[in-house]
Length: 226
Length: 209
Image 1 (cartoon, rainbow over the protein chains, first blue to last red):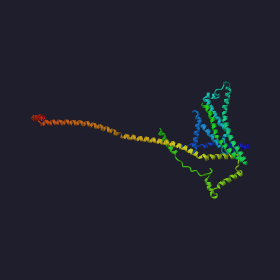
Image 2 (image 1 turned 30 degrees about the vertical axis):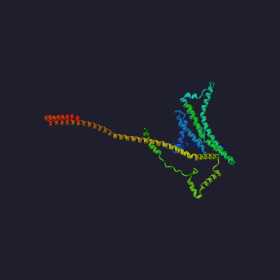
Image 3 (image 1 turned 135 degrees about the horizontal axis):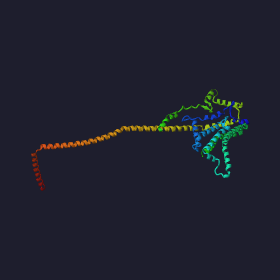
Image 4 (image 1 turned 30 degrees about the horizontal axis):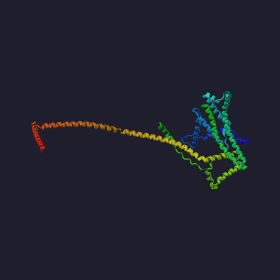
């Protein structure tokens, strides 16, 4: 049971050759780049979606912040597509690996913070202290704010990993429960229904991407442009 | 400037609005199996043949544990079931929405094309009317010249008629002097005075009557 439960999270290898890179590159096939003015249905739907999301995301940024739009849109598309593809049976989701999520979170967060420190040093340092704190508390509060600042990339990565992994594990476990309960008939119907509902909720993994990008965005906004 | 940019857009619109040959979707049953398979089995097994074959294969693989029932089976069933449900319910409307998006793009570009065509047409018409105007301008000058001509003619006619009149008067005077001598002049004058006296007597007599 132990081995079987986490079997879907082992990075896949074919006779010792890791094919993870290939698996990470596969979702890009689903996004054809538009070559013509009038494109296929899929491409035009994607264009419309991307326009919608881009508008929502980039509205609150200044000109300088909007240079990040390509990065953020590709981020949301990548995480969304990998999560959704991971819902299919027997598939591997790269975002379940903490290594990958850390690799996404740390550089982006660091870029935001360092940009803020380079161009608006005083403002960035000022963010370390909330307004209106009584004077004796200042040293402690600065330490606390610094810690919370450095926890941000960890929080981003671990949040994504934990959510996706937990979802997959739950589906696996409940499927296993259903399997076992098939010999005891009446309960299975309700459990299958629970699986269905859980899956629908899990398909809001896309909402998790929203959360990811939003958090990243908020931090970028705060550090860079304010 | 607009005509130049829309001239560049013209061939692009032509390429973009070119209709590809409409793909005839091949008939597929259950989303997976082409219709030819069913037609292939029809003579031997009738309508239910392929379905029985499918069910038999599935049950065989399950009973012999060729396909092992695992927890993933149930998640597979739920994922696939959910996807099929969503696609059957919302598939057509999403396709129509995508078509509508493309329709909007085409209509925008069509409108630009029509506007540029209209603009060029207007310019052509204006050119033509300008040319016509230039053609007809000489009429204006003709009228003015003919006016001047008439007035000069009038003036000269007046002078000529004055001269004629003077000449006639001279002729008359010469004729009178030629034909009437001094003697005849006295006689005619005496006669005229006698006539006048008679007339005066008559005039005196009459009011008495």
